[in-house]
Length: 486
Image (tube, rainbow, N blue to C red):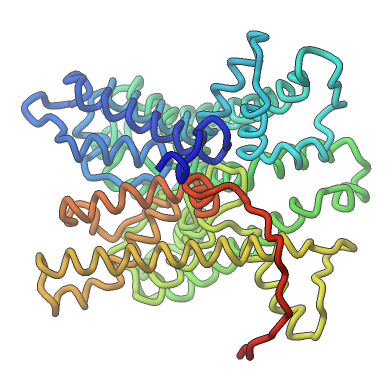
């Protein structure tokens, strides 16, 4: 076992697994052992409920088994929000930032871990500032600059979202107070702050059991939430690369972006457009039937932005057509960008696999894009990531169906296949949308969902590396032999 697991401190992937596990345990202890976290002391959280909630918040998923608004007190909601914030920007980011800010000695392994989390190589190539390895000890100046940029960007985005949502909530206080959304101006401001953080971290936790349904016709609320989701899902390297490019002349800004940023921007825009148009078309006679054109546009736009990783919704997922649910599953699988607050097997992974396939169809042996050639290692990593994601999802789906068969019966289970598939992909993609299956699952199935949320937050590749041997040399190369494909 020691040879298999290895030293946690030696490998960044194992450190990541340990730290996220520690955050989940901390959240569990606070939610379970602090009675004040429960809104009603007569209905305390069970062990599994506390573990599920802590994992969902730490892994910024948004699946719930207890009502965030009604079953948790203000303290409980604050604990959940803290887990969302730490999980969203990465517990390693916060920990390492504190270490370097107080000029303590940051180890090489710490810097490697934070580089893997934030894509520090991309950030350095984006030239956030000159790399001054001679200042400070062990090159901490460069790391401090990266972390400061990340946390500053997070604070600015969440603060801006809070101001916009807070102003809207106060201006429309009476209207939503009549609907029972909140009871006081202070509660309205708390909703604005909670939802701003939850949106930027792509968590999907809401202080309304119906999520954003009460605001389904509001361009301001849905637009702000959607924009925060998109920014958080692009990834820190892309946002900082865009911020850096503002210094260039307008005609040179696109050409000055990193290849990763270009792929993410084009891929995200394409997925948002596909999700938006598909939802409008597939649900024109469904959940959008009878709604004004403006409200249809708002609902479709939010669904397209949210379903890839965030988990907010302004329509009931259980009311969607099978075609819409299946399309949503595909979008949840792809997810957001690397080094972002979102999950899935990532936009760049899907883009690289698609580009490799297209190049093969055209008879090319290399993938060229924007006058750059993609390394073979990147293509192999993309294929491995997608295969691991699909493999994990398939194993989890089969296991949950076997478990639930005894509860629902075979005929019912076959009818619930799409719902269970939706739940599994939502958990592994750290999305948080649900057709209502979460609260109906047995304890064993919920534990599987807990594991999926953790694996999804870490990423299949990171998880595999964290639990496997280090890379081994291959001294022997045998003669090539090519099997038939296709």
